[in-house]
Figure 1 (cartoon, rainbow, N blue to C red):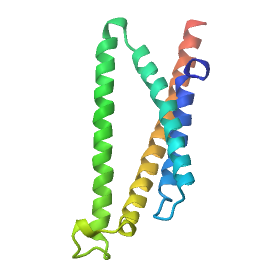
Figure 2: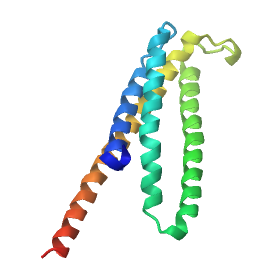
Figure 3: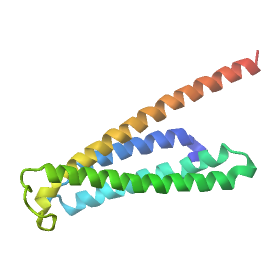
Figure 4: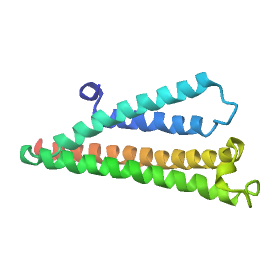
Length: 159
């Protein structure tokens, strides 16, 4: 698909789908039906699949043959670091909202009920939706800039 449609189109599509997934995740509560959860997780898997392969291909094809190994290891390091950082940020957001909640003041974290966790998860997934939307806007802006530069280069080489 990346070769047919281009990595930028797939990246924008994957980020759009990820935005929808974060919105769906922010709707979860303790009564959410299992089929809805499965559908949201399946969409998440599709978004990750649409994003990962074209992204890796685009990064590796932008470097010279000698630097592909270095590019690959730097990319994987950044990807794993970003994943760990994301888990830490979202976990911190959930915990912060949980600890500020009046329903858990004076209660140990061991005895927190699922109902008390829901607002923290909602806020975390809403934050995720905002971050993905920002990434989508950035990807679209960069795509238009790259196309504009490619067009200028084509005009200069074909007087």
